[in-house]
Structure formats: structure tokens, C-alpha cells
Image (cartoon, rainbow, N blue to C red):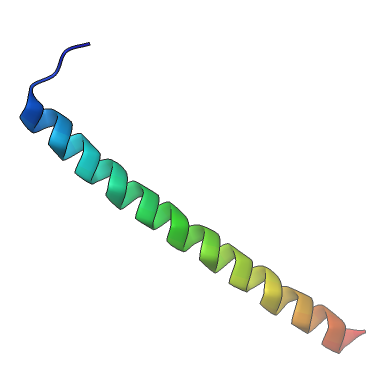
Length: 44
């Protein structure tokens, strides 16, 4: 699997963007879980 350097750099950039998006999603999920826990404790 040999790719030109231009494609490699672009894929790396895309990968970075994807990882950033994934990290944001994880943070959002954690925050949502915290909020859900708070609402559950309020209900009980």
C-alpha cells in the first residue's frame, strides 16, 4: 500500500479531524450522562 505523500498528509489531517470530532462526542456523552444522573437523583 504505497500512497503519494500528498494523500498521506491529507489522510492524516482527516484523521485528526475525525479524532477531534470523536473526542467532542465522548465529552458530550459524558456530560449527558452527568446530567442524566442529576435528573435521576432529583426524581428519586
